[in-house]
Length: 579
Image (cartoon, rainbow, N blue to C red; front, side, top):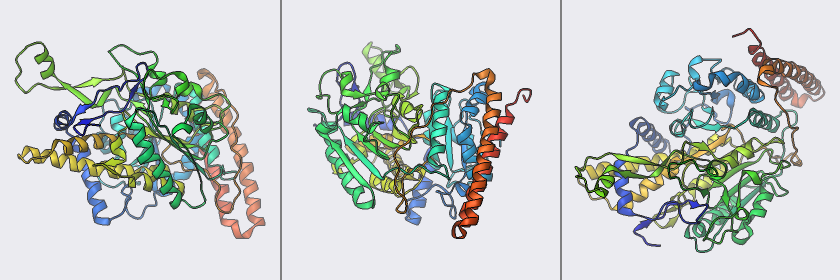
């Protein structure tokens, strides 16, 4: 591999060739100088780096004195797009179990548009505009103003990926977007089932590492050798009480990945690395792109030629009987979480177009982004995993746009500290949003370094193209890790004092038609109150019988009552004649 070329990831499904050719480092360095980081985002990133250096601690998010793993202190909020206001009643009904749970847990630090009408996302808003409008300010998060945990509900056409990236610098941010209300409801029920205080999900403490390796393919050879295998070794030494299993190289087949995503080998946590499927875009909608982009290419692909169906796992391969409840997955793959409309790693200039036609060039022509899809979208595979009708995964961490080797190799050396720290936190019981802070810290450090080196060039200092190109690709790569799912979820596993239980399935629920939604919501809300009140009574009786755990049992009873009351209130809000 030439040291003067940078190899973008992403495999074309139909040809087996890279979606972008290798780029000379000089070209990438020039691109870096033409795409500066937004000033409001840069200020936030610099503030993060300053705090980390001063305090020498790995967590930046919330202000001092707030436990980020306690929702009553850290807060939780949900952001709906104002453009979907007409659809909101049905959407809120589908998500009612999750919203009621988080409202009960966060208490006065719960926020949505019913608490504050300004909490909507309005078209075209930047992160800074939205945050200022809601009483926030740059720096660490004060949950009394804006919750630390924020769940975006909607597709990236309504709430852009860029807004999510920027908001995630300080907050713990996740996103859910599904094509049907049933998927929203299944996801909500799955999260609630995993955190039921009377019968919490207690999966076996099993982690799986899946490393695809394709012949004649330097990218996957590097990821198996320098990422998946050493990461599994390192985290296994740090996470006591966990069972680690690995499927590497030839064992990383599509059949085995299917067993890890809903089959008999499904763990509590899955880490997968390999190529993500991609499609060329020539301005026309590609029928397969929306359904298959980001599908995981397995070791069955020889490293050349078209990627056949038997060589990759897509949403259609996750069957109706899959058992996924409680899973948290991390996909290191191009487009594994989603696809932006424009390529974040390649731009062209009008200079090139003018030169191609023989026209005069002034040197001031504008840079243009290259479209890679007709619109931005969330990948279909994680959508299927999260919204599965028999119980979905809790979250998928993945990449928007391409994933680069700079995530784990820096200046020729293996660099896994970010992955090691984050996964150790996750397996130790931290909420997922706290885990992603490690990746945000890396993004902040790279962004400030990149900006400084570009500034040095403006003052005529010599910066090697290799250094600038490496910083730019690493910066864009670090920014694009996102959480699909509620950022407040955590692994639902048995602890040292309890026995693990088999992964259950939930009953598929068909939501009422939109016209009947208010009545159906009220009916379900009333039923929830009855059920929760009964559970609360049982908990109170248990408290009397077991004095040692009396406070805990009473607390659980109150949580049930609060959740039920919140659910009923949400249902009553949608009664006919209210609006």
